[in-house]
Every structure is written in C-alpha cells, then in structure tokens.
Length: 178
Image 1 (tube, one colour):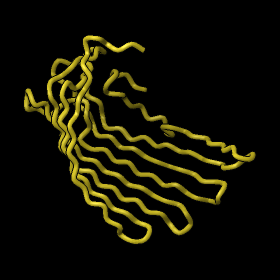
Image 2 (cartoon, rainbow, N blue to C red):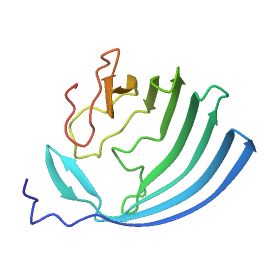
Image 3 (cartoon, rainbow, N blue to C red):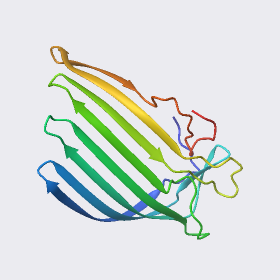
Image 4 (cartoon, rainbow, N blue to C red):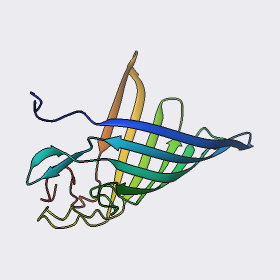
C-alpha cells in the first residue's frame, strides 16, 4: 500500500484529566475529560483523502467495569465528543457525538468462556462539499465463544461479528452499506 505523497500526516495534541475510583473490591469507575487538537486532519471527499484544517474535539468518557464472583465480568463505556472545525466554527464531519460500548464476559470454567458485546455509534454528518448522505446511528452486536487448552496449549475461538447483520457505513470510506 502506497501513501499519497500530497497528503500530510495528521498531528494531534491531547490533554486528558481523569479520576479513577475503586467502588469496591471488584468494581472500578473512571471519568475522563479530554481535549484533542488535530492539525492536517484527513477528510474523505468523493472517495479521495484530503487534508483539512484544524479540528478541536472536546469530550467526556465514563467507564465502569466489574468482575463478578464467578470470574465473569461486565464493562460499560460511554463517550461524548464534540468536534469543531476551527476554520468554520461548525461541527466537524464524520465524528460521532456519542459512542456506547457494553460487554459481558461469562466465565463458565477455566476452559470455557463466552462473550457478548454491543457498540452504539450516533449519526455522522458530512462536510458541505460532500454529496454523500449522512451516516445514520448504528448498533452492532458481537459474540464469541472460547475453549481453552483444547489440545495442550491450543485454544479454539469462534466469533461472530455483527451478529444480527445490521447494515452500517464506514464514514471515512464511502456511504454504501457493509
């Protein structure tokens, strides 16, 4: 894969401030505020990558994870981010305002566990010069089963990504469903 010699790499300056709290012996809670300043941000217009001006993303992330007595665990993560194109002062395109991840890992035994996770991503707008339609909200569910030490040191994992076959779009590439 060859890069575009006319495309400059994105550069980012990041500032984060967070609090990590141990709620109890098995549960942790984290809250983090962040500010990202991106220069030469890469936008895709008509399938072609171009450098944009500066983008500032301000946001907040909340995380909760807990390990249950039987070794199972759950995790929850919510991110709010507000991206602004510093040249226009408008909300920057192709970056969701909200993202939510939730997962549960069921620990059946030392040899077998199962995982289910879901991801929600809010809708994405486009820049004015981009004729493609906006990207709608998406929710996907993934599932995995893991059998450990089947033969000696070998494990078998079976995964299904996007379990319910939801159509979604990778906003950076195009607007055709995957």
